[in-house]
Image 1: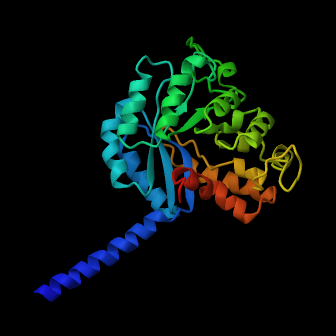
Image 2: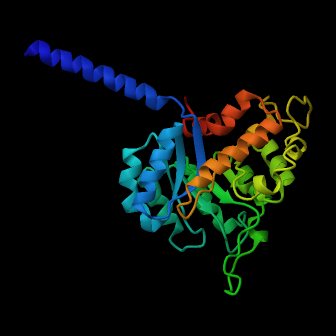
Image 3: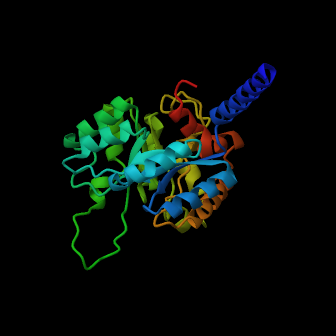
Length: 295
């Protein structure tokens, strides 16, 4: 009996070691931008998709869905990373950040439709709290959809221009920022902000890679500094395209958009002859290192 118990102990240790090793390895894809629609069935479908591609996603969760979603995220932490979708103008925004952090969420977003410019000092306490917790912030940047044009709304692209991220990145150097949609259509501004701010990245989700599908080579002039040795270029030596990370912007349960976004990314990067190692960082490596800064 003692021998049997010893054998089971050895087996348990071996399985645990393999599991720990698997969890410590980066997945093939990390999607920084998936909206939870509040439907538990969507979570099951999303998990199946991520399993099929060896993927992980930043799951954007509204405060009202925190309690119902947290157990599923905890159970599948190798696939799902919780992000709290707060309203920056909510009087309880700081408390919500505390709640999401206490629940083990690693970031905030997608922040969108602020009543003031993102870089307004009244929002700084929110960013300071996120920096304190080591949280990542995903910002909507650029144009916003207008789905109900006959209904008045307090929304303006001017308040969420990508240029506002520059001031935030400089004021909070310990905070990692991701600009969703790369400031559509201000891609050049976005790239230049990313060039000098090591804590700023962008996703190209949404309409950009659709409208530019016949002109993907334009991104070579936007991410221009690869291999350029100059006082005007960063010293990291990373490929300029590595300011991009993968984001699908799946919302309303439209999971097929994940595959469409992935295909568009691959076509753009291949058209621009982005090296394989840089592509691996875009699709996974960069965000893995952000999530595991000491690894």
